[in-house]
Length: 169
Image (cartoon, rainbow, N blue to C red; front, top):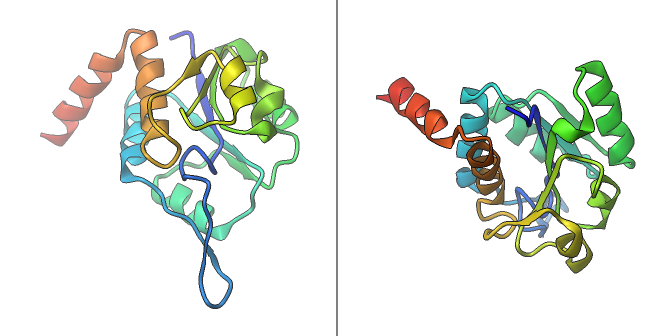
């Protein structure tokens, strides 16, 4: 595989970018279980996932732990530097990274990674410069579509589905 790392933003990709507030002021987010299957496909193909988000939120950490995603950095102000540090640590070049983001805090990664993908409802400046715009909106299965797109591009999507079926039958 040419792509060796999947990197994703959270808000606007895994969520619709909305925050819901309880009477106590707790911020809540809605996640789609469709994206969970994207994690399963990546895991089956031994394709690591790194989450980079500008927000620091315990709910996001809980979701990532439930999905057994151990590579994450929250509260990141400079996603490019964070990604460069991670890639250096694991001997991965930026050209081997596929990234999904939706807004201006992802802009620094445009034209730096091998593949930059965005949901259909991404910020216009991001959409105009992304390599690929997905059909799904953030929070509606965009991460799963991203993973499927990368695996299809690498020619291993059917292998991933076959492995999933064998494991779960």
